[in-house]
Image 1 (tube, rainbow, N blue to C red):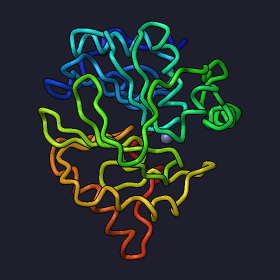
Image 2 (image 1 turned 90 degrees about the horizontal axis):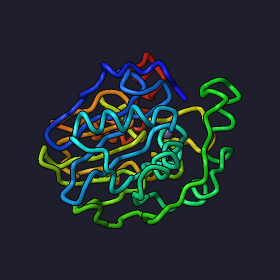
Image 3 (image 1 turned 45 degrees about the vertical axis):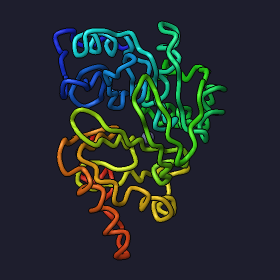
Image 4 (image 1 turned 30 degrees about the vertical axis):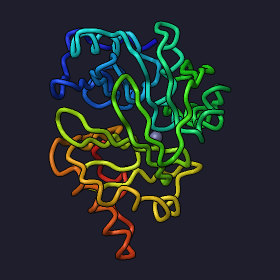
Length: 260
Ligand SMILES: [Zn+2]
């Protein structure tokens, strides 16, 4: 497992209720993790995404530092890409937490399918280390588009927005900091789309589904990488929607860029 993590780097508590407990840019965990958000919910800790599984000890350390406990009640996944989902199995080894995942990625997770998650190919081209694995993990609840579900006392509305990947879901919830949308890799700060040169990523997906994020009145936008914001979150979403509606391709991740 990854060993360069500095135990001095901790405390990325974003507000009273949320801690950023893993990431690839700031150095909270390891270079293969997405942003993992820990939320203090009435019924325990809810994680949004699980990271790569390469620095789970660091993630748990940060969770303890930020929110006072690492007793995870549930993990809610945005999609099955390796930097978001390979960490599920190591977390399940430690906690009896419930796993919530979009219905389209259930099979990939339960089979630990390294081809369909993109891990095998990404590992071959050197994007991930050879020892990184996607072990099969139980999915307790699969989530459908439009479903409203409750996890540890938090109510989420699920929105399926393909484009970055066919299985990408966003989750809308009311937190102490405001109306919050966890978008995974669908969209980033500034209205940048998560369109990538990988199997399953498609502008068609965005054309079909991005408008599902219209008019949500989002205050806080929490993407899977890069900058997040506590104000005017909807502005970032609307920027991308407007470009698509005008017949243009919005800015895409990977150009100039803000996430690596
Ligand atoms: Zn992704």
